[in-house]
Amino acid sequence: MRNGERTATANGEVARRPFVGTARMRKACARRWGWRAAVLTLVASLALASSGCYLPHFFVWLFKPEKFTKAVKAEYSLRAERLVIVPYAGTDILFTYPTVPIEVSRELIYQITQNLGGRVKTMVHPVEVVRWQESTLEWPNMPLEEIAKHFGADALLYVELSRYTMVEERSANLFRGRVKARIQVVKPDAERNPVYETMVEVTFPEDRPVGVLETSEQVIRRGSNILFAREVVRKFYDHKVEVKGGEP
Image (cartoon, rainbow, N blue to C red):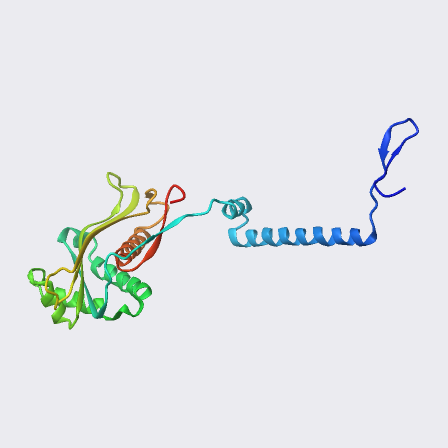
């Protein structure tokens, strides 16, 4: 009787002989299931090692829906042989955050270096700019073209901060950074200035405020500065953004 062949039992019922299989088929099955077990073991090991034993979180991440993005074109192609970044913050901001001008300038320089490549050759050091501002009290009344020429720059990025707060509105126990500024690009030799102008406003964290016992103001400030600088520099190059709520 062949493997798997049906036969009648003594009581007249129909039965099927158990499948035995050849030695070659048994070896193939063993190899196949052994490979699957190895893969599952590897996945579980990586999940345990990388997520602190939060295996369910790992599989949620593994099978979460795909994120969709859309392309965004640059609003202005910033190019310069020598760029100077000039930040401005009112006394109300400086009283609470006296170092914010140099902090924001440093993050902008980093984002420009990372994303604009060879389009901006050199940049004036932010310490040099801040020292000049501190020694030149009348600088806010000077034309931006003159400031650019003072630093030998062929382009000036002006950042006028109108809001810089790290505490959630109407709360003393929650952190949330909010930064808003008017952005201008000035070219000393241009017929009309500014050659580009926009407003940038960011909130960090974007989804919710954070309790004062969960983090520190320094962490919120650093995150706010990074997010703000990223959004400013994104105006100057093509990039992609995540589309919230599904496929574009």
